[in-house]
Image (cartoon, rainbow, N blue to C red; front, side, top):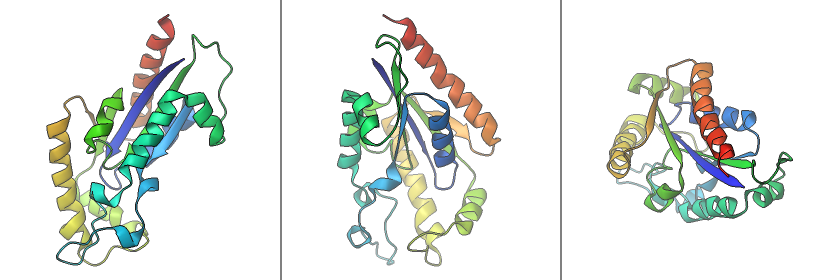
Length: 201
């Protein structure tokens, strides 16, 4: 039994969730963990001096819990998948390759987790497109006036700078490409690793 962990990071509304979900649906024996599922309760999210909720910081997330789940999967991916209701294919143990897809906007900013990834992708889009897409999304609670320019974009730039200082082997993806093109590229990339692992005995 062999394992691969693929990280799909990116800015808000860049397309990371869509890519991660579609990749999961195409790859057998894959599992998806989304960072958005680990947000703290709203009352525990810090607030800045302007009164903006700081959702774009690690302190707003249960990162240790997320990492624990990644490690649980790595120890026994078959059991982990069965416990959350996912089926596995019936292959010999020698040829079985399990893939964990981890998706989120700060997945590469939590240093203790970074050693787990085998492949890392980061989707980016320009400021104006990001702002336009964000304005069409409904959040609970909703974004207050000025939140994108006062909090979301500045924090993205800060987080990206920190991420790049920590890691050097991230594959950056242009989020303005056709979704099918992005999916095809990443899928072929991951399948190449899977086939290489299957060939090892």
